[in-house]
Amino acid sequence: MLTTKQKKKVIEEHQAHDKDTGSAEVQVAVVSKEMERLALHLKKNPKDNHSRKGLLGMVAKRRKLLQYLSINSPDGYTKLIKKLGLKR
Image (cartoon, rainbow, N blue to C red):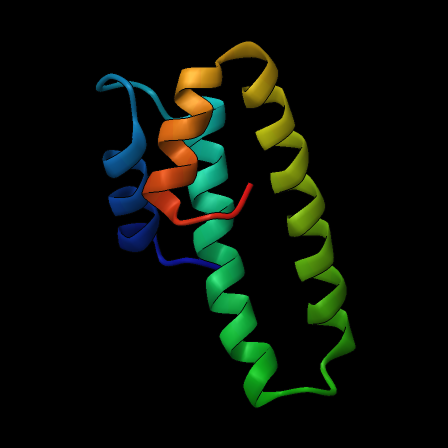
């Protein structure tokens, strides 16, 4: 899990307005940051299959959120992809 400070920083970078904590853009950014942290953990601990399963769940969640964004907000989708450095 991300620390509260790390999560707050990610939310502030991607929020549309002051009280925006649950938009799809923010959720994708938070999940992406958690995935980065978990990927580093799995490089150090390659036999940790429980964490690997959690990472796969995060990948699926991010994929679904990105698909939702691409349909409902194509401009926001392209901005987010560029900002996070994801392929699509």
